[in-house]
Image 1 (cartoon, one colour):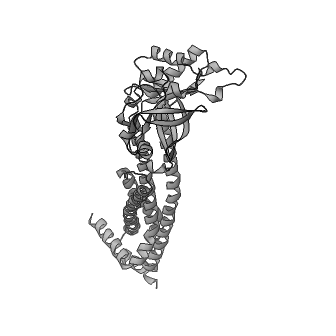
Image 2: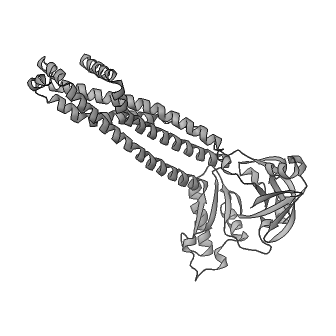
Image 3: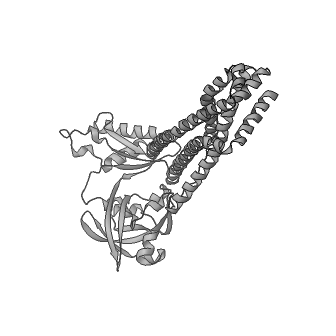
Length: 413
């Protein structure tokens, strides 16, 4: 133990003696570790933000649709799409699983009230949609009801920002008329409710004046249209959503006489997994590129340690003549290389965390609000990896020093 502490002291003394040279040697390690820490932290923060978005939205929804790759144009018929009877059959077959199921229909429209115009993104929904979509908070009025759907009423629930823009306040918008164009026909929709959408971490990316609105799905569907492409379903959140999706599509395939895989589904879980997978791949790819600087840093350590061996040849000769063993010299130079790497790794870790925090601040100025996620395991791996770099690249110079002949070393000028 005493010998180890002595070697550590000798290594620190050597580093202090050549401060600038030691710093430049560590620079490659500092840059590499800080880059890896910053990239992995920002990547983990982005994953956390995406997960939080889906959790806020509610992860129990899914969309059923035809598998477009399996739709043969020769055998294609309108019956391959969905009807209200299909939805009713699903509800009857899975009454405990399905909490909400309606045709997924949408549209867009420009509107103008007085001299103020806006663009609308209209989604057709079923009754009490706000009970299932957790991002919606009703501010005034009410949501769509069964009576609105049965009567195909021209009623609309608008976003609070739109209410303020067009009518001056949320309460003032109620019972007012909003001109909308649906299926090529213009009509006036009566505002029955105003909702607020929960703040998204990525809200700053939406810079247009397009506002979400909700109308009865029966109103958004073209008059007399029987078929639609998608079914929107909210399931029991305490069950396996993926398993439910497979059950629903399998049942529809049996009922409609289609091959397995003809219908598919997309859930919040699958969307989240896909996004996180892409973010993970990007983090690994960019991190691997950044890690190249660790290799450069390791070569720098090897280079400076070879110089150090040359400079301290007489010192090695004196130690060997006084009884120092080969492994003692080897240990001394290995410890010095590892200390250089570990110090560089520690500084790089601090820089990486700082860069990550700066990244969060910059993202915040662009309207993307995320909390920095620093994984302790990543820091531990980074420091151990930097020590490993020092050990690997310090091994050759250390062996060279340990194998010096003491007589030849003492003669060295």
